[in-house]
Length: 297
Ligand code: ACO
Image (cartoon, rainbow, N blue to C red):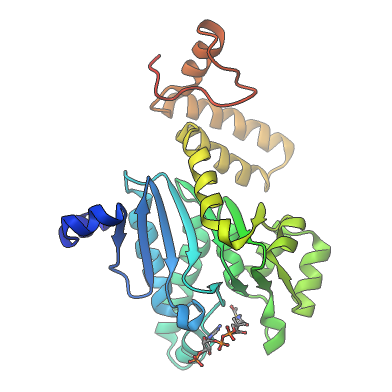
């Protein structure tokens, strides 16, 4: 649907000039598509992209469309202006829903749904690109994405303690699963901030780069991943997430079944292609890079 809106509304000359499909149909979220990458931008820069009930609804709609959009392989979540996201909108998400149980319930569901349920099971590769401030509830979408990259000087903070609440939703669970226990405890109880560089050093994110290179480095990472077999990438990320909760015996059983499923579900028959290109054609070395997806078996 996003593609349809873009083709219908954009004048051809303008679209050609930017060579970028811009879909601006959401009130608080901007979706830009270029070279099979969708940039999903939380777009309330004047409020540091604090997450309002409307933003949660918009993100759900945007991601639902992108999950089945054939023109997109990788989804990047980021923020407009100087913030990634200042967390939940204290005015609209908390105070604004007090005394309105229906709105509170809908907002809470929508908030959890896109930030965790959808993103952590997304069928395509997801990257959180943390361009600036990242506070409180915004840790959930960073943790949910498969990969995370930040500007060196981005500011992260579990600021809940500073205004008398705890990291709720599932933020506490997210941080004990993505940080060391010591770091999770320290930052949750002190509310101290840490930079993108420090986030990378503590492995909360994959890496940090100077802000001027953030978009280029994220694009490079997305394009590198687009060379891999997408079905294998999907099954692998599902496997990595699933085995974390399992015993070794359960994991062995699950991974056998998952491998068989991949063998039969992969439309490009990557396993056979890889074997043929290595063993018969001798055109690549699987240890050093991926097979050539453009070649037929
Ligand atoms: N909720 C509601 N409004 C917010 C939020 C927020 N989380 N964050 C920023 N805003 C609003 C401000 O109220 C201000 O609105 P106004 O222009 O109408 O007064 C506007 O965004 C700009 O904010 P400033 O504070 O002026 O921007 P600055 O760049 O100086 O500081 C910062 C940015 C550090 C992010 C600061 O706004 C802040 O501390 N925000 C709260 C961060 C936070 O604690 N988030 C956790 C929320 S709780 C949770 O997520 C569970």
